[in-house]
Image (cartoon, rainbow, N blue to C red; front, side, top):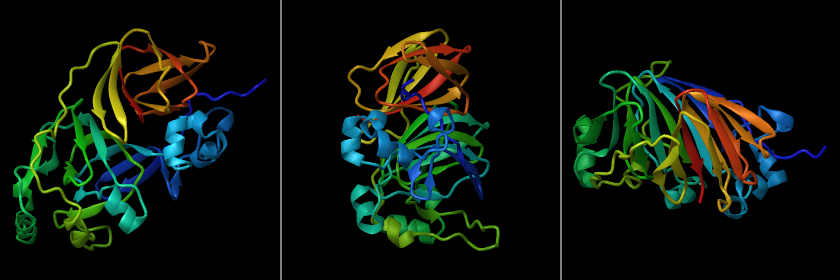
Length: 311
């Protein structure tokens, strides 16, 4: 019997952190490449799948752009304490300094403790000198755009924007494949050995966008049975897909893989003319190969999925 591609789950790569932890759901980052966890491809790395199946996995146009490098890094983040204030370089700076992609990302808030906050940019436009003065005097928090959040909030963070996840937050993060981070402030926090964590002040100065942006939170209205767009950039498109009854979806023109992250509830996804299925529950992620053009979703009650692909 011919073996055909199917929705692929991967073993999470769990990373304990000083502030909590991350679960890398799908990763092509060197040294942390995901391994398939279901079906006949179980045990194969994402890189090996790309080498063999190429455009059938990611889409021909995506493969032409990225080759055997998977373009996205998909994570769940559990922040028991606040993360450092940081910034990521854009493509040009990351290529020049690190031979890497830049790092544009987005956050979808899964859960939040009362009063939980995060930082997305500055609360006003500042100059480089004003920023450095605030950093040197311990007044950086006074110029950061700190906002209270609730589950379902979406935040887009283009490369160059200063940002930080606060304590008491669980977040789904979708980003370019890059692990380049410039830490600019860490609340005088010390690591397990009692040392202050390294800062990257000099590297960050030329990477930061010092302008104020009022698009720090993405407003949208979820619609049952529909995928509502929340991010559409050159690196990825993300939709919030909510459903409480079966939905069939066709993707005849989409030349890309599709990733589904389950953020609430759960569902069965049928494919291959309804002859096969995969289940997805809260906290799980699946990659649907580009060659699969029809899916039927059977939710277990109210379900929310993040639908991610590359145009």
